[in-house]
Length: 439
Image 1 (tube, one colour):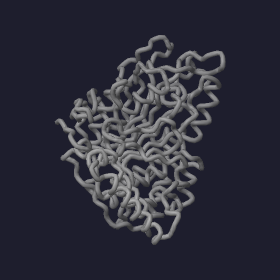
Image 2 (cartoon, rainbow, N blue to C red):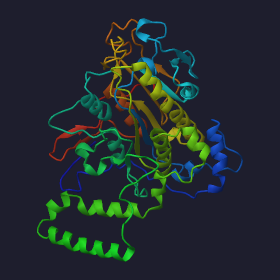
Image 3 (cartoon, rainbow, N blue to C red):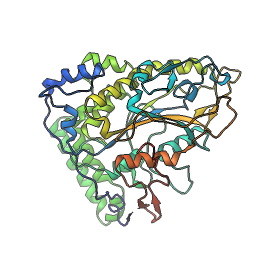
């Protein structure tokens, strides 16, 4: 399928197959019952208890993408592919998980219990060992091209699965990663809405003046805008100024904006996710997914471990483990996991060899990720890396383009469809082929 471009509006088409998410009533008086179940990892429905998230999203809800981005290049050996007792494994020990026969690094005891809800890929392979280029590749599914800016997978989800009932941005990035998911050739309207301190601070979303003064300002702005548009209808339309202002004003007055705040969350849930920007980000991400936001990325730094690799990964694990584990518990208990594709990944892995600074350097030749939810198979292990650290190409190699074709298909998006860029160049959403063992 090819989606053409012409005027400023036609290069932002939608896929006609997309159904609409339906909002339904909420029953906050039953919230604590559900929160307790989530905190205990229980996934059941009590008689007469309606799942709040299922109600909000509707029985025919579209799927969403939730990405946990581990910025800096996490070591596969200190996360999802440890080699204890081997020279390349260093001092890191391994622990059993809820996937029979699969171990992960000792820093993730809570996640080990929840791992059976998702799957492990240990054989990702890339040619991009630079942070910026690797990040671009792992967020878009395409290697950098000087002639084109590809959209992030989250931007594709925002573009391909619209929902007019959602009044807040459909592509959101939580955290301070310098590489924000962009809309690329799909347009700036699909760039991620960035929140640097999730759960605590939303900047510039409240008017600093009263309602009367605000209306006066908007009327004055409209006079200026109309004067600019006179005789310049096409250039003015391309700026998306009117659409941006309208969307901003709609969001500023929307009840859905409360999804970004945590004032009404029980303290035990806040504690379960962890008192950290990343923990709060994961909780905000769950709330945004409940509201129907199509893509949410939560970033966690601290993995660029050229020195003191083991200490760095232990510190990062104390933040990632409780937040990720509680996120999976909540998604499962709230009937959201089947409609949410969950991806945990970074731009590349770390070398099997340990350098003189007790660190590991960049290694795109065999690294790991966690992937699940969204109807994908769970409890699957794909790939194997060399215990001696000699072979650069892992067994059962998985290319990045195939990973993202899998994600797009799980989201219900035709990964092989074409979109015409603003200059008329036809581009496939993905050049890959979905992994049959997961779909």
